[in-house]
Length: 258
Image 1 (cartoon, one colour):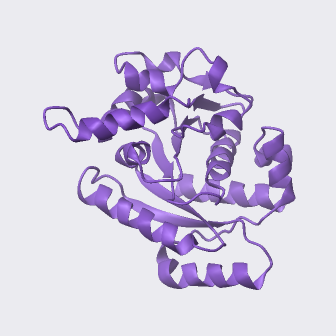
Image 2 (cartoon, rainbow, N blue to C red):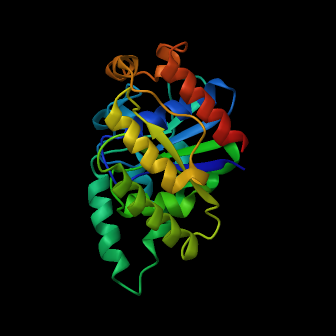
């Protein structure tokens, strides 16, 4: 059965999609059969692997629209051996609105579990499933929390990060105490670390408050990551010897083995 990890934080600009993409790619390179699920209407994980949602025959949104459809017909191979993708589409915003309305109707099933039902036929095919989510705690993120085993919070060493962590941690507790008791734990990965006093201060603040939850590896800020993003490649393949790539590889080892 696949280990299912949701990458989420109620904040943009923290390297969330970069983290999801590189962890998924690193796991695949290590030999783990990996599925990356893009739940963000911006589809940056999909685009970041060189795919255009507008020309794809089907996306994750089609599975939400037709729960009886075989999800294997939507899964795509990527240029990373062993890494498959459930691509996103801008129409996920419409599905999100539909879920919000459905949640207010007591005669309708709880939309929080739609993704879990969609993925059920695929779980045996993979060792790891990574969820990339929007930068907000909407129904796409709630669906990921309902389907996952663990939460990984990518927290940039920058201003306002602690607020994003707090709100995401509260969402984790709500999920575990209500709609997903199998959500075992939440961990924090500090990303985009610079050699500045401001970055260091944010890192220390997060460390003091969440020491037991912090992964023992940081992701350094790097122009190599930006170059890889522009070329629609994971940095773990673009420049595997770079400090950022090695850091992502180390985190992948931690999350798959612990």
